[in-house]
Length: 366
Image 1 (spheres, one colour):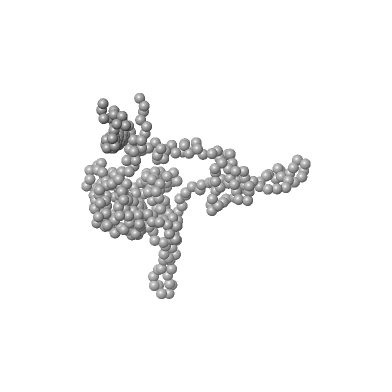
Image 2: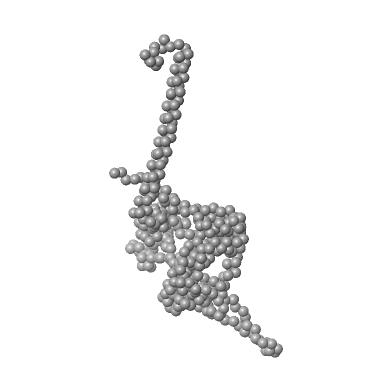
């Protein structure tokens, strides 16, 4: 009979202790192996999940869309914005606008028009014949109904005629003195400052090309060719150079700077072949609100350069003290090191976020 099969009564104390010690070691060894197997299984499960993600990303890269644009991205609705907004807009006829001094039933989401807008009051009264009742009695006015419509006064062109009076002394004949007029933004031009401001805002803020602006003026009976508008834009840009200097000074004082560069092509650029890639560098300085600037003081500057050289970034960041936020482009590192800037980078976070979102999509079951 083996030792393990002996009756426990026949085993002395020392043998029993040795047997228990052997069983304890065997149990500990089994637990160690189980723990090792569990850890190995966990690593294998993580490895399988990683390989499944890599396979899904590879299939998506090979057969799926290459664009990073997401279907849930609001930018995808730019071209059908009107249709979608109209579908979600409550019916305007379902409620009346509430006017101060008059109680109206609740509206369906339409807000009252701003009080600071000027009001043009148009009164509507009954005809004199309708003011007389069929019984011959004169009707008495007992109240009024007030409703408001938002109207638009189209922009109009007009001519400012400056009349400068001249004076001379009939006795001394010391010459002629002529009254001064405000200095023109473009000397020798007949373009007024308000017209020039409209052209600049329309081109750079509203993204209206000059040929469309020329057609807009043509519909109003004024012939302003595109080359004339282009010359005015260049002359205005030269006149605004002092303002650019002030904005550069403000950029050097902001606590946070966002910076990026994007490609573009310039037609007929001297010394470069057609189709050459150039770059527009964008800097946006952010400042927190304070008493003098309740909404903050943001500065946005654009700089054109034919190259993406690190020296361009260094020149644009010269004298800046704010924390810099960029993508993972290595061209910023030289400027960060040279000026001792705090540097934070997104490092292609959008692309990686999409990959992460794609990898978490449930795979199709066979």
